Structures are given as structure tokens and as C-alpha cells.
Image (cartoon, rainbow, N blue to C red; front, side, top):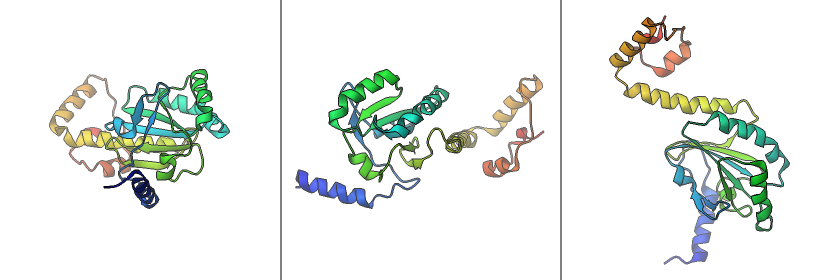
Length: 212
């Protein structure tokens, strides 16, 4: 039997040992939204998840909001979920709720009530902190670039390239070629030279349809 205090100690030790490396299974977290409904990271398995750890009193966090909203707009229709986790303390709970309305923050907005479990598990000592998780629940980047940083685009390219690669690996090449060549014949698709790196990465010499 493990009592509450012992469980807390075990969680603290596990958190201290966890390194949040790329490819590792993410440690789950669960917090309430403004209506009191609980949401956990694992609830969104099957989607790419972007987590923004922030607070209403954090000026750099507020500075990222226009860029974050723009990114969310660009990702509409894709399997991407944005989760905001506020580390505001309980005394600022009503202020946080008002901020959500005033700023019309999209996505899933959660209240962590201070520097709680998520900050300890992911070694968060400063905010804003952005993290990206893959559809299988693994870590893509636990210290991702901010939305205002153009290098964030590279993460999206990797994520969506992997999805495209999986599609290619499971798609019958003959059918794909016939379909694509029909589009080319109709003038609906124009073929351009493919960068050598893409050919090497895809590793599918039978996809000759890509070549001019």
C-alpha cells in the first residue's frame, strides 16, 4: 500500500529523473478549463499537440499571442490541437478567465494553479515555454521555438513530411503513378525537378512520376 505522501515522493523522484528527450513518451498532465472540465495531454492522442505554458502577468507570453493566433489559424483543418496551460496562481483565477475572454484565446485553455506538476516534469523554469508532441504521444520538442521564431516552421515540415512518407509507404505505387500521370496529361499538375535530398530521404526509386 502506498499512501498519498509516499506517492508524492515517488512522483517527485520520477520527475527528477525524466529528461523529456525527443522521441520519449510524454509524461501526462491534467488540468481544468474555465468551466471546470478536466483535460489531459493523453486525451488528444492521435493529434499533434502544441502546448504553450504561460501566465497573464508574463509580458513575453502576451507578446507571442498574435503569432500564436496566426499559427493556429494556419493549422485549421489539420490534426493539430493547441493547449494553453496557465501557471497563474489561484488568486489570479478570475483575472485569467477574464483574460481568455478579452483576448479571445482559441484552443484548449487550462489552469495549472501555479508552478505545478507540468513545470516540474518538463523542467520549466521560465515562460513562455512551447512544447510539441507527436500523434503517438511522444515528444517532438520539449523546448520548441516560439511562434514568432521562423525556425518553428522546420518542426512542422518534419511532422507533416513524416505523415506524407507514411502515406507513400502504404500507397500502391502503380495506382499512384497512373493517377498522377493522368493529372499531368490533363494539365492539372505540372512536374518540377525534385531536390536531391528529397529523393534520398523518401528512398522510393519506383516513384518515377516525380521526375521531369
